[in-house]
Image (cartoon, rainbow over all chains, first blue to last red; front, side, top):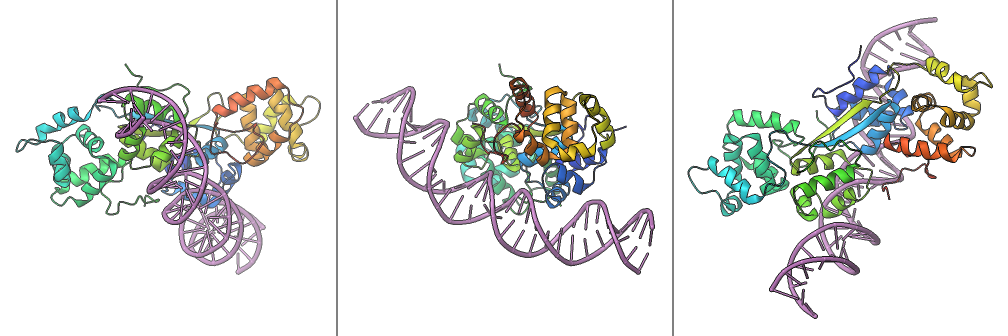
Length: 178
Length: 178
DNA sequence: CATGCTATTATCATACATGATAACACCTGG
DNA sequence: CCAGGTGTTATCATGTATGATAATAGCATG
């Protein structure tokens, strides 16, 4: 039959197309039912990333689905109310050759990012991002030059799942996945 | 402590604010971390409905959360590949006084909507919407005049949960909830 | 009292998603 | 072959979300 759960790592695009095929609706037909346009729906099903929730809602309704949006704390991540001092303490183990503190981070953000990406765990990367802020973090990632290919590939795959387009050359978020 | 599941019927706005308070982040601080603006975040936390998924993603990342978006077939709803003839068959029981068919629907959409909202179940309403298409359904709902107050209140509460702003006077979707 | 946070909200320029349209490439049945 | 369906994609006008800015108000602290 069909899979109700859809808990796999499908993108929103793939989920939409899957549900539509389950209903055996043509793209044009679903667009009409959902009161949107074939152009938009085709974009949505082909790697679009900047969806509008209101449009997703209309599509979900036409598909007889409920659009569920959750903010799930990332598994294995520290408790939510961790503060900056604790983050710095935690990251310090990656910096055996110096004392890691706010001044170091402020002065050598790219070097810090390289170190954490090379040696840290997912938790460390997330904490670093909280410490630096998203834009400085992303900017620094793109300035890294000493990262091993292995580390780049690894974080690329991980961070993409977390919804962060990190290793792209441009910091502007692309609307398309492919 | 805090609730990880957040499975309650919170709006996206409420979920965002809840997560932010768990992190004890100020609105301005989170906006900076997520590389968005305080204006947008404040809108998002105060009843905004037309979110952009890419912005939600940035906020989720800054909150150490994964943004999970699912299309869940509505519980108790028929199998997904039901076709129009079967829908008409199913709705026929609500029309004891005439034979319900495509012609009736086409000629008296408002009357049909009134009948189904007054006597049908959630499944019937969803099927009717699939049959009519979203815009005709919404348009017809707003033209209803003979609906009992009880039915209006009931479907208002139900359909709002399903993400459909039905009983509003204007068919244009508002960006704000309140 | 002032100072500095907090959050909200109005205004406005800009960026971008949407819908309409059309062109195109398919495939299928006549 | 044609005719009609599918889905994709380019272009463009328009609506609208976003970010910047500033004004406002609330609240705490000195």
